[in-house]
Amino acid sequence: MPRAGLDAEVVTRAGAVVADEIGLANVSMNVIAERVGVKAPSLYKHVDSLSSLIHRIAILATTELGDTLRDSTQGRAGSEALAAAAHAFRLFVNKHPGRYAATLGARASGPDDPLHAALDRSLASFSAVLRGYQLDPSEETHALRMLRSSLHGFASLEMSGGFQMGTDVDDSFARMIAFIDHGLRAGSESSDTRKGDPVMVRPMTGASRD
Image (cartoon, rainbow, N blue to C red; front, side, top):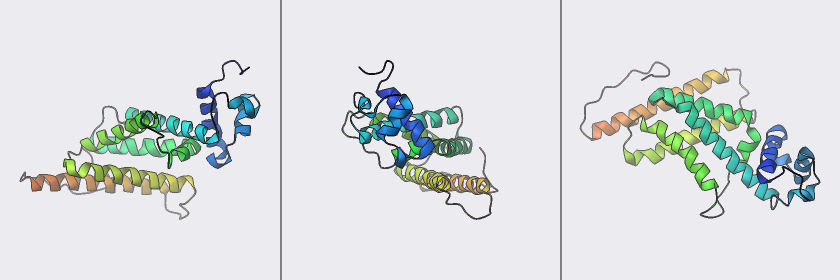
């Protein structure tokens, strides 16, 4: 008989915690079973396999990240929203390296896979940040990819200890946000120029503000 109170959600959350503590590569059904106080075969009453569990962790992490981004940018726009989202993303990856690792390369198994909704939630928050820059619609997808890849790259390098030089990492992160903000503003102004609208070029002195 399954242990009372144990279900797929409990197993998934336990797996996510373990992944954060010891790394996703070290997660096994035996380790999870020990954490929740059962024998490994009992877990298969709730999840089909280790790969299925990791997929569930990816869905959980993607959902949590989407909620984190949404909450961090609530009531903000433009440069302020960008900075809030960037810092929230970085903090999430630093706090939850294992579960974030599960999201990398995660693919939906079909049209009803909850991963679709989780990804939409995360992308919607990034899209909301970009809407504050009033980009041409043809540029939005490129900007979204640029923003996600920049934040992912920085956070992943930091998580893996990839920054070995003595220069302050926080300062580097702030400068990256400022460069992204400057680029997005330039993209918006270029779009206005193509439409024949007058634009004002703002001087760049660090992170620009609305």
